Image (tube, rainbow, N blue to C red; front, side):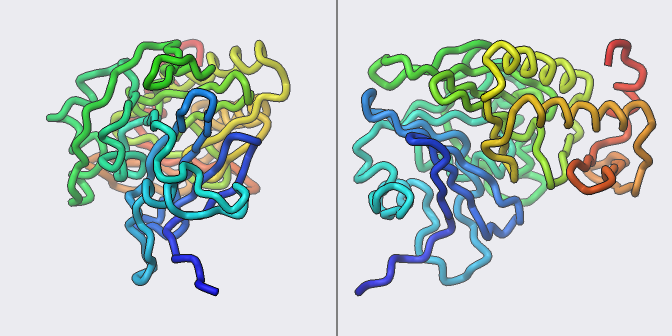
Length: 303
């Protein structure tokens, strides 16, 4: 019996229609989480983020293309069928933000609808993308793609204009173009790098803790409205966890940081600014960001 080819990805089923594809051994050690929802009734497959482009630490890995993986690799968690056999379903791709570990495979889907936040068009313009994606600082090629900029509360439709029951929300904070996705049917909330557990939450130079508090407050309002069974999924580590508890607990940790209740554990110089690192006792939450962002939040009333 032929062995299946080795791949840069692993997949688990989260719901009847939704899957978590993780890039398990990428050379950047980001281990990004890619979420895939099949909507056969609309001839659509929704892909949330595209990961690191299959750049694997495993030298002899055979399948590094995310699209090839989705279309050709049978999965035990999907009745031994690929998630999108032969590309029979049309892709709609949503990028939670422009950082390299979320966009490096995006060129594989340039024939598809690619949705991004319209909150700050200049931030993700062609001239600024190399810097803001962090590709420039890493010395790697910046992908080229033509996204559709969508407004806050945008309802996602298939390529044939069938509503998919998926809502896009602007959630600036981590970066200006950060967005969240809410799947009303599955009661699944996807928050990109806004927050996660058991991995260091990072704000780059372009981030804002003040905006982060406003965005997470709006997500909590959404979750309270939708009910206690909403689950949260992040760009790293966290998946299918109780949304309200994770949001509330993360906010409390960041509040403790801003109020000076969490001590600085170390300082690092990154991208021309002094960064501070905080580690919560027990290790569930940690944070690294320019110290400037903490001081700005400390001075801001209402945080």
